[in-house]
Image 1 (cartoon, rainbow, N blue to C red):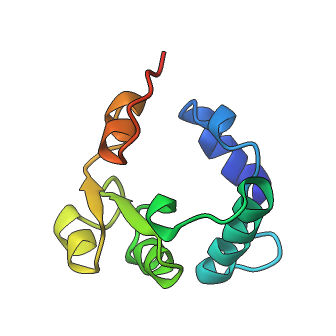
Image 2: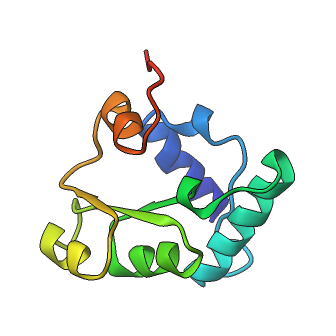
Length: 115
């Protein structure tokens, strides 16, 4: 649900980076949610190339979701699924915990300074 998603983003100080979002209100199917997110991004930014799309999650379902839309799947092995399991299902990148924003931006190829 949107309220839960927004609360998670706010908890980690990421909410200002995501003014728009696709949440599970209409559907719980992760691929459908990701497809809606792509549509939202394209409405705001025009054509978005898949190598600039990222799905971040902590389960193999999240990784498969990212791969289904051609996005780079970033897995955070902070829950029930370990780094090896998340790597084995096709993650583009795996962390044991959510990194500092600057490290994240550098990993995805953005060199902006985050304060």
